[in-house]
Image (tube, rainbow, N blue to C red; front, side, top):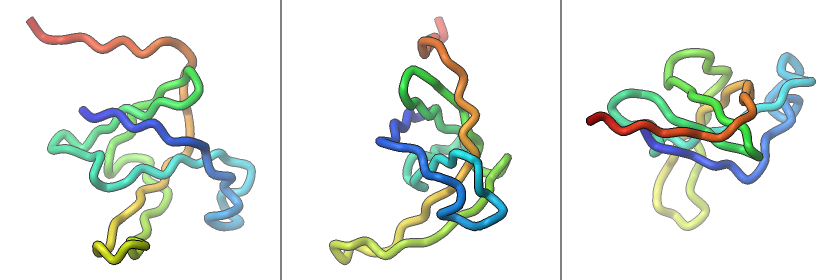
Length: 90
């Protein structure tokens, strides 16, 4: 599982009226691996998102440097405070 750290959260109204009042996190497609899960960390909070669960919206964007198209997946931010502890299998 990869870790993604966004700079800021998005106000929901920027995606549409139905999302107003919500904080949204946008996760790039390249952070999803074969498990389909990503650990998102923002301001001492964390959240695990899955590619097909709780997905609000997805959109393709043209890369500003002409390298092709990339996808962003939008999820409602439901981060839980606390340190992020990762365990390694023995």
